[in-house]
Structures are given as C-alpha cells and as structure tokens.
Length: 123
Image 1 (cartoon, helix red, strand yellow):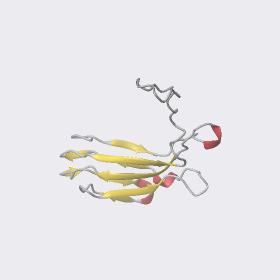
Image 2: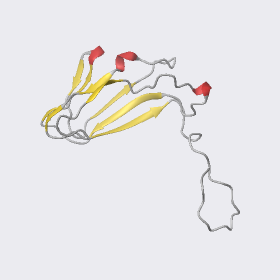
Image 3: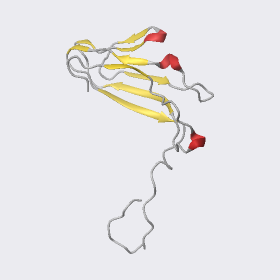
C-alpha cells in the first residue's frame, strides 16, 4: 500500500548473489507479476527508467516482466520505481516467480505415527 506521498525508490526485484548451486533452494526472482488493486487519483506510476516506460496505475490492470536473462544473469534494464502518490492511495499485489519451485524452501513436518492426533510441528 502506498498512501499519500508513498513511493518506492529505484530498485531491482532480482537479488544479487542468489544462486541455485550455492544453497538458495528456490533461486532468484525470475519474473514479477504485479496487479494494480486500486486506481490512483494522481501520481503513483510504475516507471522503468532504462526503458523509458511509465505505467499509470489502473485497478485490475497488471504488469509482467522478467528480471533475469535466459542464462540466469540479472537484466538491469528492469530497474524500476514507484513514483510518489500525489492524490489518493495505491494498492498493488506482487507475485514473484522464482527460478525453482518452493518445495525445498520449507522443511517437511516431523514424521509421526499415523494414529497420532496431536498437532504437527515443523522443524
């Protein structure tokens, strides 16, 4: 949520130093899917300075972009920012798609006897 004067400075969604071969189990943020959940009275654009693209928030609209090249290196052209909200409020929903699945990100529950009705605890 970005309220009045809310903004997000220029940044990358991909994270430097993330590597599947070095124990980062789900890898880097391969792509970003961002949904605008509200209209904004004035301001709040999402801008990609290197691409000279500015997108005005519109409720129900979505943006999708890849953060990595095909070889897994970061695509620095995808640097972006959220401009300040001048009038209104801005709500967005982000979903980051990672290089690998999340099945290894969280540990499985402890193995307990099948007849055990107690709560399961995670490691």
